[in-house]
Image (cartoon, rainbow, N blue to C red; front, side, top):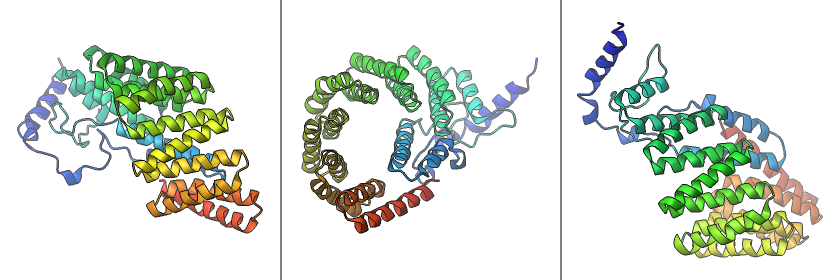
Length: 361
């Protein structure tokens, strides 16, 4: 019998268990985004690939890049393993190393030897996020599914919700909308059974967004009007969620060229944002409202909205939004017959875009 692996495991337990549980990790050493193993930014291939696409001159490429950043932040926000990791290694801070085993394999090995299925599922979920951030979506989906199987066995509903959310998000990002819809439905089902209104509303909005992308406008409209909006407005009393519903409905109508209805819901979103003093919401609704007015030829009215959005963005340092605003100003001034102002706005757009891409990595 080979006793060497057993000896090493006993050595790890004996050398750490006496001190690790009594110690705490200093707050100053914990980064803003903590994970089981930190992701080296140089290997963040998702960000690199999106940056290359955004190096083109069009505003749509920049929007694609910004959407990818939002997707990354959503993934990060769903990764919250406990700082005191429940393995025989005691407090785990990413420093455990071995010549023969990766940190991932060590954590899986330790959690399985302890019979700690919660810890095992947490490792799988966290490494799924890490692989997604690195651009390896296929491996991320495998890990999320493995974590989901364990969490379903344990009936760990909060973890199951996160698994479903990330499976829906990654599949949607990959363009696999059928799978994304399947997991969004699963999220709705478990949230309904557990009476978790916040995750239920998120599931409704995920479905509405996916159906909007697929141009299944009737399903999307019904989902928001009959499900998500009443839940956010009446039960949760969630102003931010209510604004998302208004924006989603406006987008649904805007894509169908039902501009009167789109404008009405963007106005509702703008009024609510002003009521709760949400400058970011005000800016977003003003820009969206301007786009509708541009579509129907109300260029002067659109210019008024865009200028107000520009002033608020400068005041609150919404640099990402300013890129879109400068692009809109260049287009508006061109249509209004002011080439000097149009060229100035386009130059500012180019400077801001290049600064964003330089800062990205």
